[in-house]
Each structure stands twice: as C-alpha cells, then as structure tokens.
Length: 221
Image (tube, rainbow, N blue to C red; front, side, top):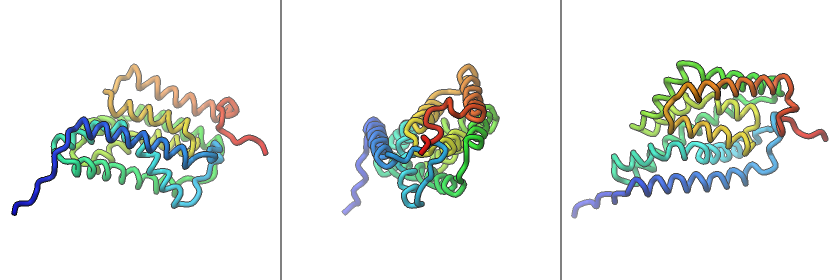
C-alpha cells in the first residue's frame, strides 16, 4: 500500500481561515484584558497570564498582515500542514519577543513612556527599520525568517505598546493597524515620515502634558 499524500488546500481557504482565527483572538484578547488597562500603571501580572494574553494578542494583531504570506506558503507547498507550520513558527517568534517584553517591563511613569514613544518614532526613520520592513514584505520562505524580519520591523511599535499600556485594546488596535499596513503596503516617504513625526510628537505630548492623553494615567483613588 502507498502512503496517502496530504490533501491539497486552496490558498483562499487558508487566507480566510487565518483572518477568522485573528478575529477570534481579538475577542479572546478583549476578554483576557478586561479591567486591566490602567495606562502606564498597568502591570503584566503573572508570567503564565501574560504569556497567554501576549500570544493571543500577537495572533490577533499580526496574523491579518501575515495572512497573505501564510496563504502563499499553502500555495507553494499545497498542504494545510505547511500553512499551519509556517504560522506556528511565525507566532513562536512573537512569543519569544513576549518573554523579552515581560522581562524588561518595569514600573514606570509617563516620562519613561514618552521617551519610548519618541524612540519608536525615531526608529521608523532609520535604515534598520527600512531594511527589516522590506525583508518582512519579501521573506516568506519560512515562518521563522518571516517572523524575525517582522519583529525587526515592528519592534519600535511593540515597545510603544508595552510602555503605554500593554493591556489596552485602543493602543493594541493602533499598533495592529500600522503594523498590518506596513506589511502589506510598500514604503512611501509621504506616509512613513509623517507617521514617524506623529509618533515623536505623541511622545513629546506624553512627556510634557500627559493629562492630554485619555487613559494614560489611572484615575485617582
């Protein structure tokens, strides 16, 4: 008897399934993070809880932008297993980034948060950012390679999320929108430079007048 070959799967099916999974993870993230958004005073909780919340968040935020690459892997290999392996390794890279975020996150105030946001904006203008962003759009040979390039491209935005409020659906949505757009759209200075300057401006506002940013600081007891 001959071994049965894996059943082929259509890339549109993989694309749709990836987006459905991302949508489900948005709902799960909202449930996990309810009542925890305290601005810069938010604490990540236990490592187990943070790990579960982080992986769910990364699946929600990053899978929409990665969906075309996952579908491309399915088209090249022709199997569901190849698509799942690609997506699994991609999310594994983001899980490792979460371990680093948990280890580096320390109690901080608006001054530190503003500094991180300014640094994130400045990073958007660097050659390193442009290199990783280009590789993130081109590198789909493996989930690991794709994940590493996308982490390199998005690291400033993710640091901003952690500094402002890692449990905030609002900041999570902003970062997800920007990250997805940068994965799918080619770089254009007319868009990228104003975005970077807007982040730097946001950081300056947080440093100088944090009360202007709703939800950044917890309400007085």
